[in-house]
Amino acid sequence: MLEIAGKFCFAGNPVRCEEYGCGLVNKTYHVVCDSGAEYILQKVNTSTFKDPVSLMKNIELVTRYLKQRVKSEREALSPVPASDGKLYVEDEKHGFWRAYDFITGSISLDRATSAGDFYQGALAFGRFIDILSDFPAGILAETIPGFHDTVSRYRAFKEAVALDACGRVKKAQREINFALSQEPFASVFMDLLEKGSLPLRVTHNDTKLNNVLFDKETRTALCIVDLDTVMPGLVMNDFGDAIRFGASTAAEDEPDLSRVQLDLELYAAFAQGFIEACGNNITKEEIELFPTGAKMMTLECGVRFLTDYLSGDTYFRTSYPEHNLVRCRTQFKLVSDMDKKSSQMNQIVARAARR
Ligand code: ADP
Ligand code: GN1
Ligand code: MG
Picture 1 (cartoon, protein in one colour):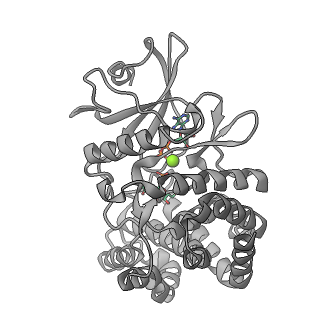
Picture 2 (cartoon, rainbow, N blue to C red):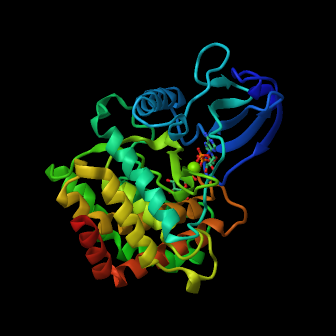
Picture 3 (cartoon, rainbow, N blue to C red):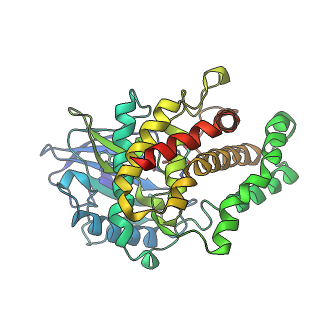
C-alpha cells in the first residue's frame, strides 16, 4: 500500500496506512506522512465502476465547481494528483487508486446520535443539491448506468431468482415474495420520468449519513464525500436514500428485526434540513414525492441486497454468508413500516415545506 501511496504528490513520505470507514464497494485507507500530513487513499472497485477514468473526470469537474462556491476549504473534497499529473494511479498489479486531502478534524457517523446530527447531515446534502443546481449536468458521465432505475433493478432480481446460481432461492422465499408483492410500486418514478414531469438534476445518489463529514468538535456538517455516483438523477432519491439509512432505528445489518423501524423524529429533522438547504431550486411536486423517494430507495436497496445474496455476494462486501439476506430483511422491514406511517411521513414533509 505504501508503494501506491508513494506515487501521489503527498507532502512528505507515507509512513502509516490503515483501513478506514465502512464502505461496501470501494476500499478506503487513511495515510499519514512523516511530515504529519494526512490523506485518504482509495482503491476504486472497477467491477462496479467500469470506466474509472470518466468517473475521475466527473470528480475533477464537480470538486472544482464546489471549491469555488463553498466558504472554507474543509467544505469540499480536494483530489491529490499523482506524480504524472493525473488524478489516479493505475496498474495491472495494484488496480485503480485515487487520493484526497484528509479533511482535518473530521469524523463521519454511521448512526445519528441525535436529531441534531441528522439535521446537520440534511443541510449538507441539501446544500450539495443547491450549489450544483447550476452545474451543466450534461457533461457528467453516467458512472453506473441505471443506478436508481428501480424497474431494471427488479429485472436483475427476477433473473437472479430464475438462475438460482447458489441454490439460495429456497432460503429467501419469504423475501422474494415480499419483493414481488411490491413490484407495481417500483415503476412510479420511471413512469413520471417518461411522461417528462420530473426534472433530472445533479444528485449524489448515495446519501448515506457516513458520506457526510462532521467537525469533530462542533458536530456541524462540513463536507459531502463519496462522489462516485454524482450524476443526473432525482432529488427524491437523495432524500430517500438518506432516510433509508439514517432514519432507521437500527443498523443496515441488524439481525433483530424488532429493533428496526422508521424513526419519525429523525425523519422530520432530515426533511426540515434538506428542504431548507435545497432552497428554491426544487419544485412543490418534487417535495411532495419525498416520502415516495424514501420508500423507493429502501425497497430498491433491499432488492439489490437480495439479488446479491441470490447471486453469491459478488457486489456488496459481506462478512458472513447470510449478510446480504440480513441486510435485505432490514430494508423490507423498513418498507413495511413506511407503509404504516405513510400519512405521517406526508404530513411531516408538507409541514417542513411550509416553514
Ligand atoms: P466508500 O465508497 O468506501 O463508502 P468513502 O469515499 O465514503 O468510500 O470513504 C469512506 C469513509 O472515509 C467516509 O465515510 C469518511 O469517513 C472517510 N473519508 C472519505 N473521504 C475523506 C476525506 N477527504 N477526509 C476525511 N475523511 C474522509
Ligand atoms: C454502497 O459504497 P457505499 O458503501 O457508500 C452502494 C449504495 C448502497 C449502499 C448500501 C456504488 O454504498 O448504492 O445504497 O452500499 N454504492 C454503490 O449500504 O453501489
Ligand atoms: Mg461512503
